[in-house]
Length: 212
Image (cartoon, rainbow, N blue to C red; front, side, top):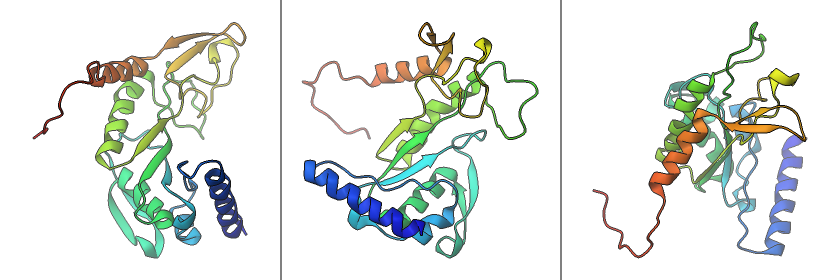
């Protein structure tokens, strides 16, 4: 009974975390295989402080509309895909804010040939365009915090490492194998570094004013 087990584990997690510090935020579970599973699990917000989502849109662009079949809770909902994943998360946490604890686009170049039938790849130039836009798409959707998967590629296919769907999601490509592997920033890494540099507050003595 996965529903009873998930609820019990979530309650135990909250109890343990708040025993250490009542201020430690507790995230709900991310359910990635079916919109309707959020509906089956139901509202467990008494054991959570944030909802949780894993937002993998690849190979579609971040702002693309989608039709989400969420069962009787949604019927058929059409709109930005990010709205689908946030709406499904609210089924378990109500009005609590949402964190996206995983999202990303793989960035491998060149794309392997032949491409495995079970894998969907985007190249590093597409990753460059999509990763920053996904962050801002999350911001516009009111997602409280977003965690990109991942910093480093898992393998180097040019040195005998695997080429797989989740192995080249990093912002940094890996050349060679541990312990002598060397990392090289991908274009998306530099783009995010530039955005962070533009938003850095180097002087904290200013008085905030309206953006409008």
